[in-house]
Image 1 (spheres, rainbow, N blue to C red):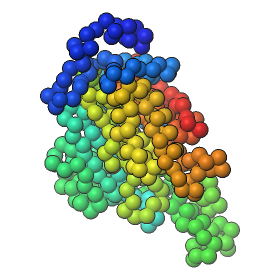
Image 2 (image 1 turned 135 degrees about the vertical axis):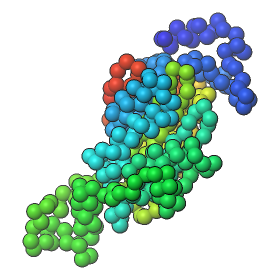
Image 3 (image 1 turned 90 degrees about the vertical axis):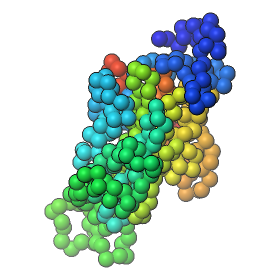
Image 4 (image 1 turned 90 degrees about the horizontal axis):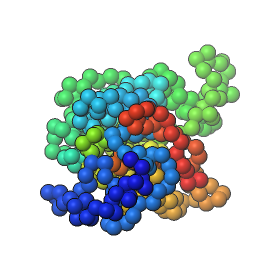
Amino acid sequence: MHLCHTVRTMNTLNRRSFLAVSSTGLLTLPAFSMPHLLGQPLKDPGTAGDNHRGPCVIASGNGLAATDKAMSLINKGMDPVDAVVAGVSLVEDDPNDMSVGFGGLPNERGVVQLDSSVMHGPTHKAGAVGALEDIRSAARVALDVLKKTDHVMIVGQGARDFALAQGFEPQNMLTDKARQAWLRWKANLSPNDDWLDDIQRDIKDPAGDLSLASTIPFTWGTINCSGLDSNGNLASVTTTSGLSYKIPGRVGDSPIVGAGMFCDNDIGAAGATGRGEAVIQNCGAFSVVQHMASGKSPTEACLAVLKRIASRTRQKRLLNARGQPNFNVMLYALRKDGAFGAAAMRGKRTFAVHDGKQNTLHTAPSLY
Ligand code: GLY
């Protein structure tokens, strides 16, 4: 339904009949209605996603397979929380995605440690794991925390033990490609340690040119995926191998409920990728959902949180010559009525959307 038409229709409705009060006392929206919470009218930012209505799955740019899978499962009647986890599990299984699951880049000791969180709109339950080792799908383990325990977050050895108890198979998560990248990173750390880089080596290694290391950036690669079914029920999941070559035990935003993802079944769902420290310090995903609750469109909500992150970035080493953050964060938002949007801190970035008809990459607006 077009935005203008919806607004006109709403004006003819009695406001009390439009907004129902749920058993929790919160305002609730009928499925696919316009959020008009706190009395603020919506602004039309003019993007297609902000005007979409109906079932929808949104993910980060590496998530086209995930949105496709999740939408096909939602169409078959699967709960969105199971559908989005099944979607991101495809990416976790893909050794060519070096930012998530199997094949993810390891920590500074060469150990892959995974973070994930998941949230189910209808029950408002969340599950999360941090610094999980030897298990392929952190998202599935996080979903087991959500479904099978009264806890929200399990980390480290406890998360591994929990996963093994649930029947997950332990395996070496470090692929040959990720191991080579880690070795190149180590060899290029300093010319003064005992790891020889390509220039220092007397005998070249046929396995690879270590000078390539300078072209391997630190990555915060991650996948977030949020889904909405035709009953207006939402779910969101984020999963990652985290910052490459991190200090062992470092946990980013992905397993932090309210930072790496958040879902409120009365309002919408949101998620984040990029520099997790900045997202945690600004309660990224929760803030996006709150902005949608106050009437911002999904795109506007993402941009508002990015502005906040930028204005709260005060360390010189994180700013460029223009005083802008020199790192990227991307935020993704899906409102209860099916409107969606995303935004990036820097540059041209894509995100994946299945809008019920087609599964495509969209380009997000950016702050800088
Ligand atoms: N956003 C992923 C991380 O910082 O670990």
